[in-house]
Length: 376
Image (cartoon, rainbow, N blue to C red; front, side, top):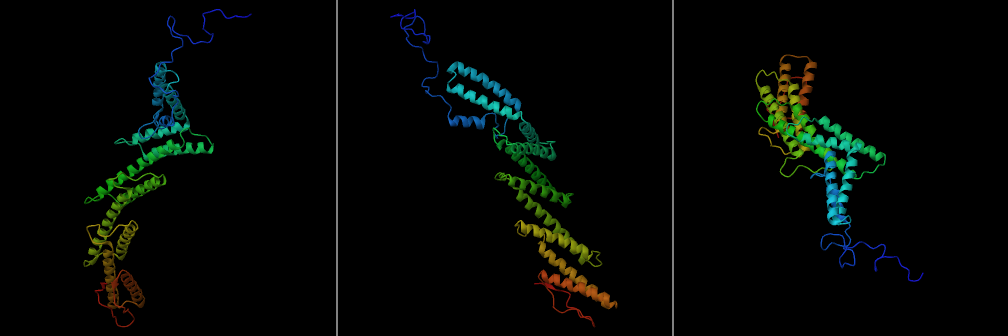
């Protein structure tokens, strides 16, 4: 009928928001919030990036343990309730806490997965290995790294997505490689210090194994793109060069002593011993050249100078042996073999820069050049 309306107070509609009774307010007050709040409180890309990169992570970027993640999520759930009460459910503070809680939930889900468990085990081992006097072995670290890489490969084969990408797993692997490298370098540093002491019990095999360990760890670091040691710290190659110098000093000293013994009257030093010592010195010299190490780092004689001196000693010995065979009336076969040995020694001495007359030994009266051939 005309003029019909729902009974009630004038100027009030059925869906109107409640206002304070007994006041002159004609409209509902807005939700409480900070003065000057923007109309659109949505989180910015910078806010979301901050949450993705820092939530649930340590300073070095690694993910916190599962129990810590669970506790932090509970704390932020309480925090969200507080800011919702104070600023409203659609305020920036509430939206920020909701995004943080969601991020914690993602990390918790990851930590509870096989990949997360393997990563947490490796992270725990790394932390233990970095403690002084740690009992964590290289084999344990290697097994943990293999576990993380195995799960990651399986995930890739299955085409599964990772909320955090591969960065977390590879960051842990890189961190483990750094621990490996630090351990290997520490072992080599200690061995070098011991090897330089007089009467050191450190063997060449121990030094060689330590050098191989450092080089192996360095190759792994390079494959993973890990930066070298911090400024001021000795690099892996610095330690390898220092160890090579120790090798050179040892080999040179051994050859120098052997030459002195060989020159003594009635010496029992054999040609095989001299040859073996010379080969050892030449091997180290080749290593030094490959590493770009200049000569003269040791306090003794230069390696090549000792090799030339040893060649001269060998030449003199073979010359004397041939002369004695002539004097003793040896057979032609014996003299022929001794002559061949002598000529070979002359050829080697010339290759090293020594000067020997071109005259050769032949049948008939013995005619040998002077016994004091000199290097050029």
